[in-house]
Amino acid sequence: MLSFTEEQIIRYSRHIILPEVGGEGQKKINEGKVLVIGTGGLGSPVAFYLAAAGVGTLGIIDDDVVDLSNLQRQILHSTKDIGRPKVESAEEKLKALNPDIDVVVYRERLTSRNMMEIISGYDVIVDGTDNFSTRFVTNDACVMAGKPFVHGGILKFSGQAMTIVPGEGPCFRCIFKEPPQQGSVPSCSQAGVLGVLAGTIGVIQATEVLKYLLGKGELLVGRLLTYDALAMKFREVQVKKNPSCPICGENPTITELVDYELPACSIQDNKPFK
Amino acid sequence: MQQLIWSQRIIERVIIVEITFNGEKEILDKEYSVLGFLSKNELSPDIVTVSLNGAILPKEDFETTLLKEGDSLDVLMFMGGGR
Image 1 (tube, rainbow over the protein chains, first blue to last red):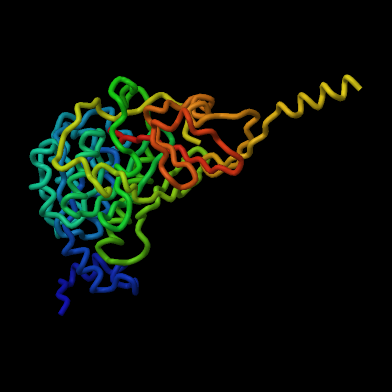
Image 2: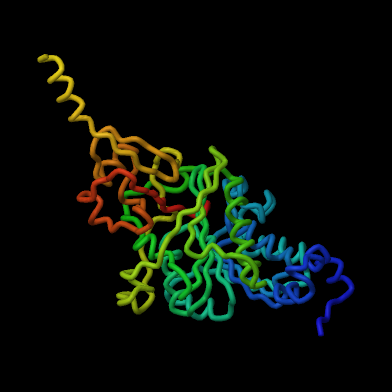
């Protein structure tokens, strides 16, 4: 028997009315446990929409504080939050939007040391990280733990997203074998990003999470979705599982989690992505 | 007569290869390795992954792999999270 309060029925009525969701689907969302890594550009819209949708347990992890230069795209934070820990500012907005949900706050950096323990409590992991070390370690941990991982990335006027379901398709390392070499890359602030891209890609990631929780639709498994905001074009690149992948291949060479020492956000000053 | 032979020689030297690059047709006027093609497009091999005809091409093979007629090349970029 589905038990919703009067208020929940109204709050989630536009979901419940969808035949593909219904009361049963909404219950799955309400029981869902999702970890959003980073509460920045991508993490903001992901966490915001998942809170609105009623994801019952929303873990947010970030060790950073809000900076004025974040506000062009990191929509969970406001001008008055400058200097505050991002997770604290984020928690406040998420709880204000939906007091129904549990927000679990981790004010720390996700590394090989705390990774396995933290992800173990969640159904889906969302990549909203700004650095490649965390992204590669998260991919490896998710493959090892068999947890789905929704990747997203943005750069200048381009974005990409892909869902990794271990055992069902390629992982992030099947495509990007290892982080780019240190030194080949200037900082994120030099390269720039059109703020709205965080919304476009973040909302796609949130959509994938809801589909996964609902068990509906076709996930972006084996399909890297790329977006060019200038051309206003989406494109899909089919990617296969790589038999020689160091983590999910036939003879994996990575058997334990390792961190990489890398600058945040590896980006080179290239022409807009075609 | 001499002129005709010359022009024939020039035609023989022009190599036209049609490939698909990131979903769009592109005509190459000479033979390119994957590395050469990336360089022509000002893309650093250090920060991209190349998918050639649906399979990820190992970085070690960028220099020795020549682009052929009908090849489909996708260049995938490393992207951050917008912090």
